[in-house]
Length: 118
Image (cartoon, rainbow, N blue to C red):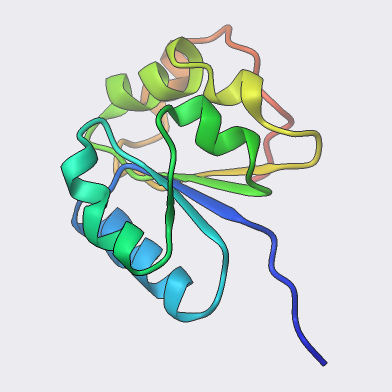
C-alpha cells in the first residue's frame, strides 16, 4: 500500500528549517519551501522541494505550514503582513516553531487567526 502525504510548507530555511525540510524530503513528503533569500532554498530544490516565491503561495498549497524564523516580528510579518494566515486552506495546520515565547505573536492581536490548540 502506498502512503500519501499531505504537502508540508516550511517557511524559514535557516539551520533548523533546512534540517526539517531535508528530513521531510527524505521521508518522501511533498515539501514546499520559502525563505526571504532564495539562496537558502537552492539545495533543497535539488533534493526535490518546490520553492515558493511567497510565504502565502507556499501556505496556499500545503496542509501543514511550519514557520521557523528568527524572531516574533518575522513571525507576524509572515503570518499577517505577507498573507500566510489568509492563504491557509480550510483545515490546514500552522505549526509555529520559532523560539520566540508566547508573548510575541499574542501581542500583535488582532489578526485573523485560525482556532488554536495547545
